[in-house]
Image (cartoon, rainbow, N blue to C red; front, top):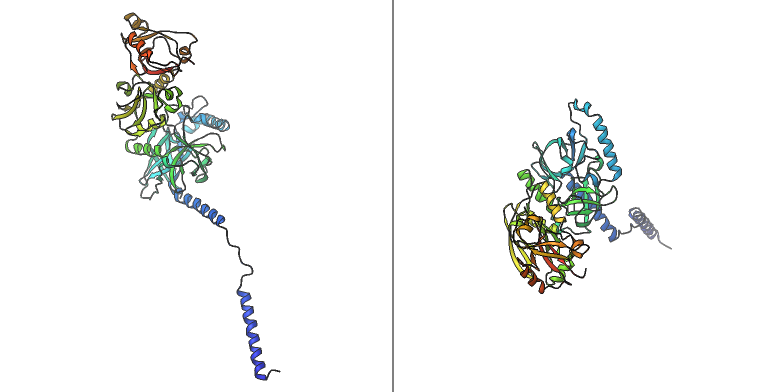
Length: 502
């Protein structure tokens, strides 16, 4: 039995234990929350990264509204824009119907005081003092341009310059003391296939839409049926639609890797952007001069690795471009460069295809003399070519026509020394050398396009001016491997590799 004092102590102790137990129950969680997995933490971090990129770049993206001149209303037969044909059939039909309605109402609209803003697109601020980069086809023939920022502020803008070959344009607005946020360019040459690509723009007028995808491919060419245009596109599956044109394609760091330019069908996940390596260069030239004057050589080339005959003839050559033809009015025609030469470097920069050659030359000033590393007859030589300004559209068409007339490479010819009579008969400027007077019908040469009137200047990259030199050069040739003939055809210097076993 407890004494009275002991009973009191035990009672108090019991009460204290009960209070502590109750307090612990009240303060303890009902159930312990499970710890989030590292995978979920990674996903949340990536989710936050996309949010931060959109918040960072959106202030640099603008929504562009355009009032175009009435005479630019398009029809199915007068679009005059190579990108128009790239649109999906259903979307092109909608546009044509829209253009027809505008045409019917043109007389009424001409009497209105306010311009009709019917065109729209996207753009990106590239300079804080009010320069905006967009697509040429968004603002071409614009009568008036309005640019709206993310915060709703709207400005009038003017066209600083247009460049048809890259389909890029620069607009200028007066910020009127407002602080603009310029986006930063990334080096698209360092962009990797598979990395994230984020497009921000105004598809169908829905401004500041953000879509996420990947860089699907790089160096896409022959996308537009116009060989005079720069075609070194970045392909992306980030959803791009009409209205995204001119807006930026950015990386996960919020830097511009391209300018969204065209799509291959709505909702297909195939979009194309002008890479930042080109876009930055073009924008700087347009800002400085209002136009872009390109340097050029006036040659048509093909990748060395794609020409089996030349690879067999020159097994020690690793890479480069073969000069297929030289335009008679181009700067290369005034140099020592010859058709069948293999260009490996331009001013020390390796070139492996037409895109790389064009980029290497475009970066140079007009009139600058370039040193080309060339392989000729198995020997490494240097050839200097003084660049000139890119020709007008008519000359460009002529170059494409001349380059594509080269024909394929076969054998089967009869050769004679040029006489005054033969020169007159074949309308030749020279009165010496060797002219092809007959091409056997159905022969390899005939199938490849070698024709009567072509003048042979070299055999296996050795000059030949007489029948004796021609025969001597053929003695050491192996027809099974191929014989290189350098020719003058309609004023164009070109070459053919003729093989007897084909």
